[in-house]
Length: 81
Image (cartoon, helix red, strand yellow):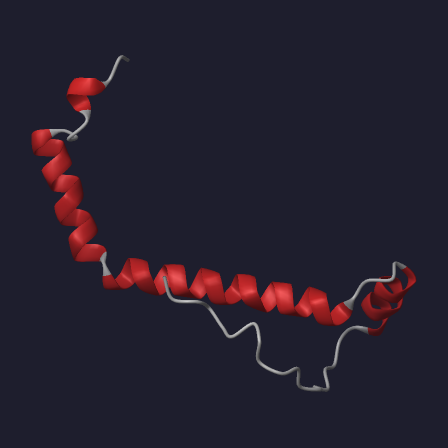
């Protein structure tokens, strides 16, 4: 599976503008802003990749669902429920 990004890439300093109250309250809780932003961006990349995959594979998903409706699942004979 393809990785979302290179986790070994060097860090790069960046200037951001955020709500001052949100920043103050986050600092009081000792929130690691860099780690928090990286995690949020990683999740956003994963969400976007999943949506792109779904759009690119909509025809195959429809074909598979039609096949299952007509023929059932390959494992149906092994089900106990």
